Amino acid sequence: MDRGASLTFSGRQVPLHALEVLAGAVGCDPDRADSRCCMVKVIRGRAKLKRLSKRSGTFPGRAGDAPTSPSSLFRGAGTLMVVYAKPSGGRYSIGDCYLAAHDIMLAAHGMGIVSCSIGSARPWLDLDEVKGEFGIPLRYTAAFTLVLGYLPRNAAGPRSSWSGILN
Image 1: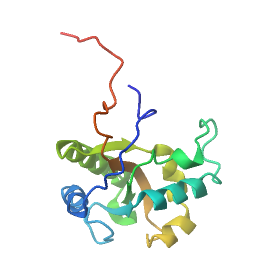
Image 2: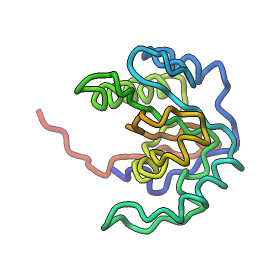
Image 3: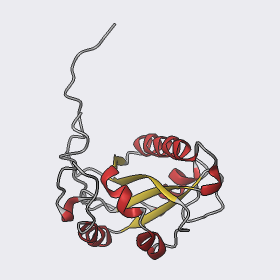
Image 4: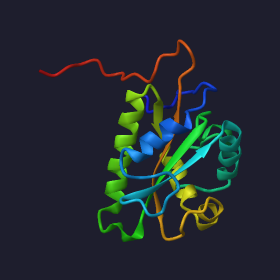
């Protein structure tokens, strides 16, 4: 699968009510630290995400990561969701956040919203400076990052290059 390498988004913004439904469906209310499994931070606006993408370019990332253009980290999307694990979530809190993000991505697909995991942004969004800027408690851990949006009109979505079916 192409893993989003060529994925680009239209300028159409995901409505707030859709974001509330997505986060609420897994018990993670946006920007609320008292949710049961995690906290979901929603950052909206293409211009804001482009600025964040440029700022993140100064973060070294993991050794061996392919270089990412600072202007394309969030692939031109207008919405970023970061699923943060709570320190009180127990030993499986990160896994619970992965499951919550999985449910968000499936629900988004059902609503006609395209999602793409942006794993390379997670370490940067976990920095104390960045968490402080967005009002995230410093003890929370960025577990999963994804962008949400819509494809340009008449654009094909990501496709698998694998064509075999096993019976």
